Length: 344
Length: 277
Image 1 (tube, rainbow over the protein chains, first blue to last red):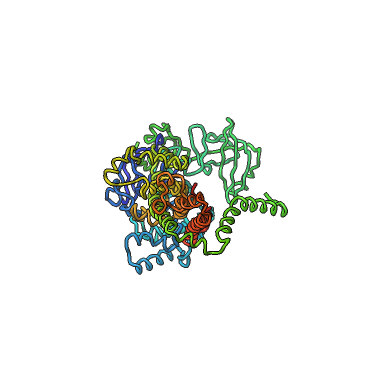
Image 2 (cartoon, rainbow over the protein chains, first blue to last red):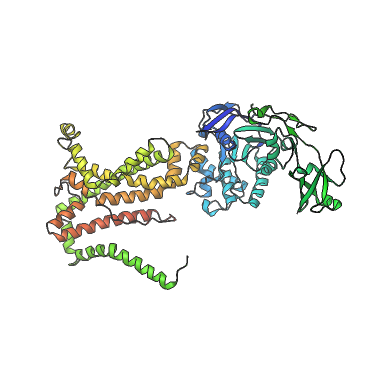
């Protein structure tokens, strides 16, 4: 394991930011820490970097206990959401910073910095100052600066959080390629499940200072350990005790023993897919995701009475916070016993 | 909000007129009075032994008090902003004391502390150190009155730059000392520079506290502001005006040095060189 965190606890006054968190990050992987704001994901990342001191627990980086080491000695590259660019230095100066501290020769620094600027596609902008760059360029500069010191692990704290949608998407694909090229073990924090699934091989879903579940995107989507994970990694409808993905809600015109009656409220075409909003007999609002072809075949219109056949429904027992870790998926498809690494 | 052209010119005239009457006119008057009969008389007045000594003493005050308060000010600002603890509010209040207390009172309190019947006076006298009516006391007074400026100007800039750049530096391997010199100080340099200018102006012009602790002995413990005041009282108006001009020029030089050093800065600080009491 490149990075292992065991039993990490961190409290800020009354707020429990990390509550007995353990994660394992394999060597050379790209892992996403995913969760809503306040879930402790950034605190965990900062604790790995040594920017936050843990109240309890251990951080191991490449087999070495790093818990008591200062950030300078951990060999991590850290990228901040708001870039943390050294504003009084040029792009070159920013990227060269760690190397100057390490007393590299001028020539070595020159070679290495230009090599990195080419890697992050900023060659030609070496003499600019950070405030002459766009957000995306600044973040690539920050990445080059972090990579310059040849870190054992690269940590990114909501790296694309301050950028607009288009740039985010481009940078995501680019980060994925960069990771494939460099092979540096990388952890990045995000609250965007699509971003996490797009970029990372392994996802760690966090909530209220705890790890809810970790695994591949498919694992989490197909076999969520609990309601939180299920609703965080995708859309979900609640039918009494059961949870169903909108694309697992089949709309049929004829009733049978597995269907529920519903009335169509709205049909919203969203390009390839169509969102059909319906209301059930007991007043519950749910929606089904259909393709355009399905919609055309069924000829659905607003106000029409249809029948829903939910499949892959899941239910989670004992989902109250205290015994969340012990929750076992029940119901016809079962959640599988998913790779829950949350310490209960 | 858009204002019509006549209103705009009206407001500008009003603003300039106000500044002109309150600030420019008195300063211009001094210049006029000083050079009324050419450069000769003021030059003579300023090359007398007492005047030269006053200039030297004033520069000495600046040379000691400004570096002291700069180092203290930056350190104190770092402590206040980067290490939050309960004592901060108390420190913050104490730093403001020199602003709150009249310089004359500061002079008096130093007099009480270091006088022959004060707490420290007798002991120091035994060791052969004379604080009152000599340079050490005047330096103490100057440091006291000008202490808050660097702290006050540095704290907001430190708060504004935040801690991320420093954290980034630490993950890149920089020690606390390296981070301070390479990242923090360059980022706050304009706040510090502005504080230094204000401190210098204050020390140059300090009158109230220094008058009391120095005894204002010509050629011995007389700084330039004291020289100006005494000359004026003795109806030696030529020397008073010339001394005032030298003070103004010193303050102006400070400003000039700062703006030359900071040509690269995006926003140049504008400061009013008036200081003292």
